[in-house]
Amino acid sequence: MHIQGRLLDPPELKYGGQAKVKRDELRYGSWNLRGKELYQPATISGCVILVYDQRFGDESLENCTKGLHQACESLGITGMPLQPMSFRLNPFGTNYAEHIREAGRQHYRETGSYPNLVVAILPEHGADDVHTRIKHVGDVASKCCDFPNPQYFANVCLKINVKLGGTNVIPTPDSVRFLLDPDNPTLVIGADVAHPPVGSRGRASFASLVGSVDSSASKYIATTMPQKVRTEIINPDNLEAMVYYLIMKYMAYRREKEEKSNAAPRRILLYRDGVSESEWTRPDEEVPCIQAACRKAGITPIPAITFVVVRKGHHVRFFPRNESDRDDRSGNILPGCVVDGGITSPVEFEFYLQSHGGIKGTSRSALYNVIWDDNRFTADALQTMTYALCYVYARATRSVSIVPPAYYADLVAFRAKHHFDPDGGLSLSDTASQMTDEEEEAQLQNVIEAMHSLHPRTADYMYYIMASDYMYF
Image 1 (cartoon, rainbow, N blue to C red):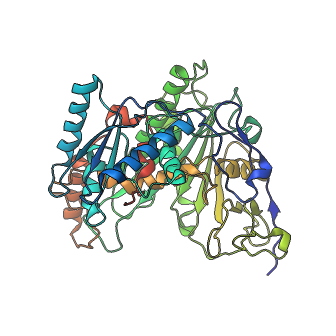
Image 2 (image 1 turned 30 degrees about the horizontal axis):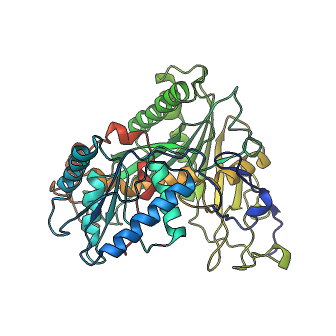
Image 3 (image 1 turned 30 degrees about the vertical axis):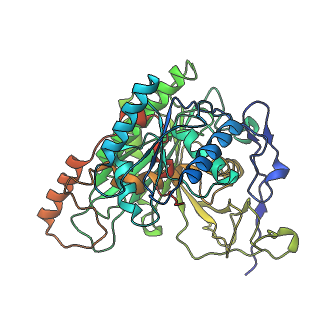
């Protein structure tokens, strides 16, 4: 069938200094970092490299350190040494936490300061166990590298920068007027729930939220909590506590970093991932918890809330009719294509948005369904702002297929397993198991008690940004 769509303009993007990426450079949803510094480059106070790959020779190590140094320099990240302290370590065993601590102590003895960046080079085979143990201890900023080329190291530095508290890119004020209204501060939240395999009992699902702290909605802090297995609606007590946590972080950042007098949010925009069509009405149960968190934080009046469900688990695909509307590289529809009629609900506020440039195969657009809207968005306003946010995903120079807050919440939920001691005896394997209701409740309590909280220094950064993104030499 033939459907009428519209093509939204991409945002303008702002990097460090006066560098900008114009709209006409973003037609296909990607851009180049050449000649640009990051918007807020972080500072590396010290770096150590842990080499677990016994086949990784001195020449490879030199190429790695040189590539990282050059990439940091070109992007404005300061403090990366040309020859950082390195340690060759045995990849077998379970003593990885002590490896990181001893490397930090050695760095302190020689330089008088502790490092804030750990680069881990993993063996090609059997790296999963090493990665899990390193992430449990070293998620302040750790990265496992790939082949040494400038583009790769630039991408690594994007992730390092946000994990150290920097900001890579922001949309220009004209692109997101709703977010940058100084009289109506807006907190943007992403939410998701990750589940174990079907049939698993005695395991926990993990509800995760991320919330923006800066005015441009480019920097997000995170929180996660376990809940009853395969329960999609977030536990009310957990949700209230997590939203309260995000609100307090948001207000603290605005007061201390941005020196704003009106620190409290006046509007909340929540993107909720992972809700099936049959449960679309049930997230209404989550809105009162958000309101309760606002009251607990002492915010009056209660901020206007907009609740948007994000889905990609559908079977709708769009194909361009005209050559001029086709992505030259993949044949897909162009980024920015939005469909809000013909196949959408006649009584609900919903739309399909193709926000990314397809690379291979047929692209799948995201479906956005607005189930609560105190802010009374027009379709154009919400679609344009959602599309603009898709261009400030921290770990890529591409627009992404779903709005970044929902994407980040998914990453946080995925890496929740790293909050547990890998040698603590608690099983988080993907093997299905059967338990009685009483045993399941007891096991959930064990999960809650065994879950380690974030280190305070980590909690204020986007520590989760490399959750599933490690490579090999």
